[in-house]
Length: 282
Ligand code: PAF
Image (cartoon, rainbow, N blue to C red; front, side):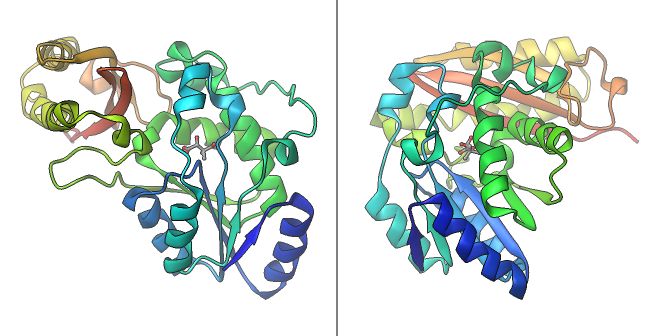
């Protein structure tokens, strides 16, 4: 595996690779875990060349403390990438990516206005900035994203449409710990007590699937919010049941072909997100 620090070198190497076949890109912010590795394994299977970017993107953090406390574990990340059979690890500095401030504002529309978009102003524009730069630098055949950040995938698809990138977005299922907690780089910040409580998020979402069979959308939302808020240290920021494509909240199960419940919960001061698909009546 080669570690690449500059955009110029990345472009040169990938221009050569493109001549030989397909390129799979896995964008990450590092602090790699098995969730990332599952994306990399899939990219490895489906492409001739695999490039993983490791970059904590400042423009997508609307909370300065979150940016400072975001885990940075480059040495361990490099070892994992090497073992996973990655061809190129792109690990640039902030100055390399943003030699000058990125002032682009993307017309992301309704998919970016709800949930994370409403709670974290500017977050999705920052995601669109960095992902569009990465797509431009690498011009991948396919790019891989985890469904834990379900809304992010919809936003990236919209950015791809706006910018006219010719590539395939591959969404990959959430990878979970044995007790159901969605894998996340933020999990390392949980205290042992919080770590023991956190699997309740997935458990509650799962039990809401059964509850939803004979309850309305509103009642199902109430059920999830009340269950989670009744647990020590847990505070739901939002729970929305939305259409899987448009991200718009639904008020009736019949309003969508695929309903997805998206939750953000503070467990102490750690912000965790998760989601679940509701099986639809045919
Ligand atoms: O999901 C993430 O880790 C980030 O939002 C991404 C896509 C790597 C962009 O910085």
